[in-house]
Image (cartoon, rainbow over all chains, first blue to last red; front, side, top):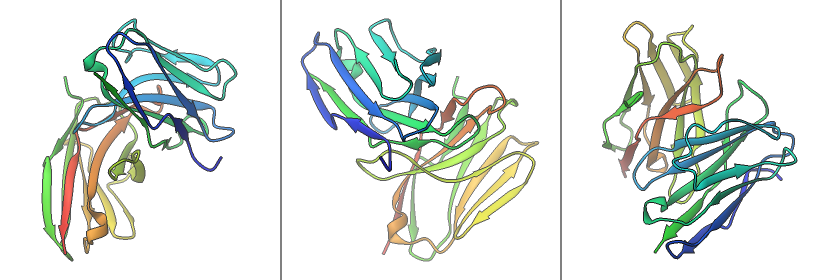
Length: 113
Length: 113
């Protein structure tokens, strides 16, 4: 596609529920990133893939967060046993290769109730 | 420790005026300094970026000024228009090491018609 596509756009989860957020990067983009953006804040880095390899997961806030990109294209961010503090917009971005600027998707707004 | 500090938090400018947003960074390994523009409900979009080997970069009405010794950089929006009303994020990355981009907390800009 022309841009980075994320789904769903909105997700409401009950506390304790597991959620899965999907990211379709721009075709051919090698690098893929996940960011978390709390209300009124800047995006904060979660994790980074180069093709299917997860090269950096230092930003994942707890072991309840897990990301994968098994075939080097689509990526899924999974959050287990959601908590209220997980409520945020989750942004996915991709870039052609290292050293190029990111293109962000519109994000998934997760609300945990 | 906040690696990229941005000010002001919010800014109101008359149409036709100059909008100025400032950022400071700590990590001397940073070698790429982008600015992102974000509209409500959308992901951040790359506006303009600079590398530390130049002191200024201009693209249309947008100019980045960079002061390497002071570890500061700023965005100037000339002839500000109501359509420029958005949240602006400065950011920094050590592209020679990884592609992780560290964002500032953002400046909410409102241009009065």
